[in-house]
Amino acid sequence: MNPLAILPVFLSVTSDQNVAEQRRTALQVIVSVTAMSVVMAVGGLKILDFFGISVDGFRVAGGVVIAGIALNMLNGESSPSHAGSDREKPHLAAAHNVAFYPLSFPMIVGPGSIATLVVFLQQADGLADHVTYAAVLATVLAMIGVTLYFAAMIGARLSRTLRTIMSRLMGMILLAIAIEMIVAGALKLLPGLAG
Image 1 (tube, rainbow, N blue to C red):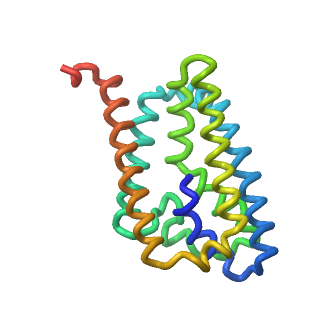
Image 2 (tube, rainbow, N blue to C red):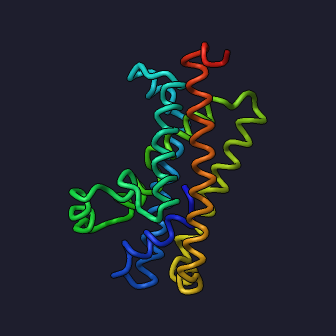
């Protein structure tokens, strides 16, 4: 859910739209992303229970997915889990309304985002943590909304070099988060590792 990482993708996918159409798409994206985020935040644990998956197992799996995305960002490549595989890309390009698929899902709310939403909510303890969780999620959603709504203006002012630097920096931060998720989940699943 990195607004700056999704900006070039949004501009690329909506390149055939004028500014008004891009803004309409941005509003549709933020509605879809907000709805999906709330569903995953509120019902994510119940969904895991339904499939018989532990939070720690999901934490490790999510960490692996996030690590893959981060490594792709560090290498300047798009992640197949967000951009689609080579086989899927022609179908994505043929989609008429790109707001939900592929922009909202899986590019913004993909496997890594879902894992992060579920894991961090599970770690929340008490009212203060839940309020903080909601405030952070609302802030991230607002940042995505503003970035996409003004994508044409922002894109015209960002150089390719600045976009590359920002993507690499976010990739490194994302990789650190992924490693912490994997280690925390592995220590819970395999307590003998803690020594």
